[in-house]
Image (cartoon, rainbow, N blue to C red; front, side):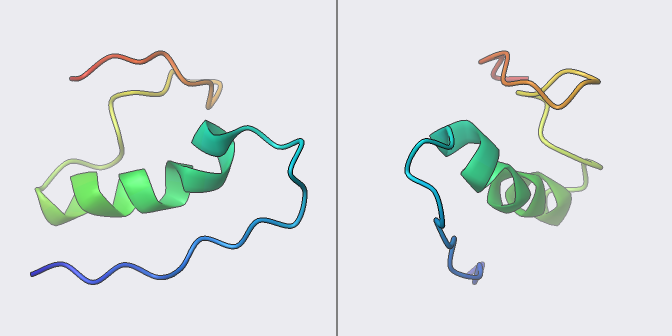
Length: 50
């Protein structure tokens, strides 16, 4: 079981992938990876599944 914190949205103009990235990183880190492979080096969503 993996418990993640809530994602808080302050600005509805912000993209979902930006808001959710910290949660995605936590899931990947729980599996032994340093971060989500769905983002490039600039922190932009690429949609890759790793």
